[in-house]
Image (cartoon, rainbow, N blue to C red; front, side):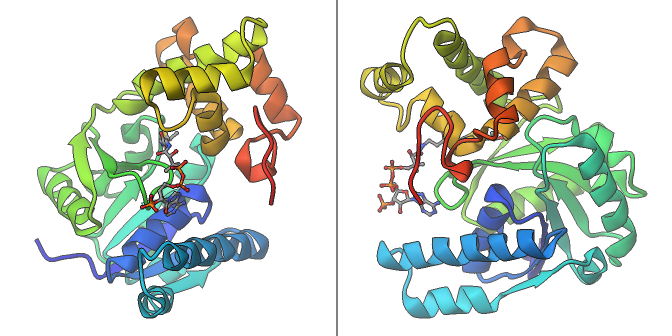
Amino acid sequence: MDPVTRLGVVGCGLMGSGIAEVAARSGIDVRVAEATPDALEAGRRRLTASLDRGVRRAKLSEEQRDQALARLSFTHDLSDMADRQFVIEAVAENRDIKTDVLRILDKAVEDPAAVLATNTSSIPVVDLAVVTERPAQVIGMHFFNPVPVQQLVELIPALLTSADTVQRTRDFAEQLGKQAIQAPDRSGFVVNALLVPYLLSAVRMVESGAAQPEDIDRGMELGCAHPMGPLRLLDLIGLDTAQAVAESMYEEFKEPLYAPPALLRRMVAAGHLGRKSGRGFHTYDG
Ligand code: 3HC
């Protein structure tokens, strides 16, 4: 299949900015959309900071950073996605917001063969596909945080996704330098189905007073060679996102192991969202 040359990314939060960065660094023209000027500016800053960090870490030259920045354009208006061949939505993990975005994209993107991918972590892809007129070209393409570092992409064909769309998305993942696994269209797919119960168990351990966050994290880092313990990982993912993912999974399976613990809900209500707010199970500077 022909490589993708014009990508759209909707949402420039942690995931959207990472996806846009990886694509721009792979030589693709990327148009990024955000709902508000503030969110767009924050996304642009995050993207630039990540590219600068790449230069500092000698992952890319200044020239490559500048070329990547030149391939990125920003908009508030989803009708600017008209000429895109492939669009990934990476907006908040909220069914209504994602549904709205997909409906608008379906009308805005002119090429009827263009793929509309969703980076949902937990919402069944078919529920999002059926709001469009092109369900055969809707697929889950689930990236992992931090996107520039994690190699994996989960491909989630829904019941209505065509074999051609799966192949084009697999080729596109390869074009981005990622490795794909195919996952079932069940809430949580493969990785979150295993990861989320583990993360929530760590929250329950804190909630019950059984162990301190520092000890839980050190336990898994030093005892099992995880790059970060479960509570640091929750802080990286964002506690609000983790809560939303757990809620979708609980809604699907009604299994207590997916139910967000009260402590997680209270922390989200308090604005302790993890790294992005400076405080979660741990505190962060800057
Ligand atoms: N962008 C680009 N590169 C980055 C980066 C970023 N945001 N963050 C880290 N890196 C690179 C660094 O440059 C460094 O590369 P180098 O070793 O070649 O110089 C390397 O990653 C390691 O970074 P650091 O030395 O700064 O820090 P750590 O060694 O502590 O690693 C980490 C940080 C990469 C986040 C590592 O701790 C990790 O992999 N943690 C686990 C993350 C994880 O499990 N992610 C999945 C979350 S689940 C998910 O996303 C699904 C969703 O649906 C919930």
